Image 1 (cartoon, rainbow, N blue to C red):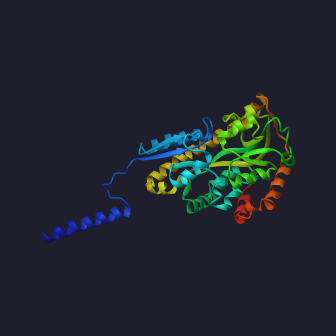
Image 2: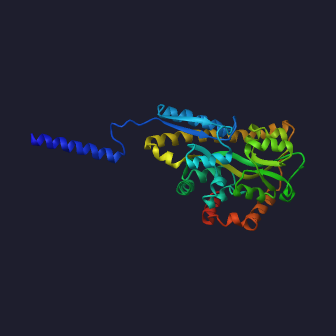
Image 3: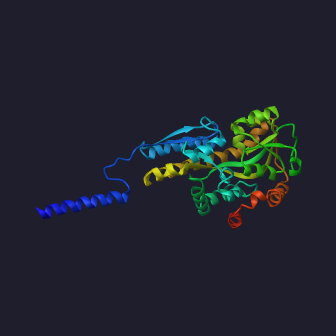
Length: 340
């Protein structure tokens, strides 16, 4: 009898030890998870489409254990507001980017600086490799949000109203009121192009262009199409000044509530969404120049890119020192070496 009691006690001890080791009792059911994903992007944007791809894939992979509520077009927050919301945990997921995060991780401003990347292949090799892992972990440690990957938003080009006239050099940008998002790194990027940067919410840009409150904006060509900026502008200048990304990012406290399996499903679904987003933007960029010409825009394919690059480099070393002094120059050199 004593032997039977001892065996029962030992069995109970083993069950308890196993439960603590796995973090949850065997009998505890994994609770369904709902992720709220907010963006100011508009229908037709590749990263808006990617939100739906992510939703469909993670719900499929998890057998419905993870549900995603998608809100686009600024339905929940402004572009500035959603950055605060994800840090506070008011929303689970948003798109963020280096210029938004550089307030907290200052060296990240170098990734949003003009002419950091030479093209798509350079950018995606950096972010979706060892350097990206290091950068994302720094964001986790300092901000309390976790970037999960980097989607290609497109290569940013200047898009100007008729009042401005044709622009080919940075010295012609001096009086151009160029819309930028409202963060120091974005404002510095506008100055690095020679412009007079004018902070403005994304949802106000179309009206700002139409009324003359701003003279231009810079975005990738697919964004110009989907936000219909081409309707109220005259010129597109192919400066290729920023190979731009958006980072699907989750509140870190929310991430830690997910099981290892749930995290794996999220990452797998996001990789499929990334591939779709990148494919759409690369294909669209290849054909949109002709489309914009057909809509009456003048596309300037031969700006003096060397002059723009030199102007930007000089700005970051002089008037823009408040930005560049925060850069991790050793890491910057590693990034540049990957372009070769």
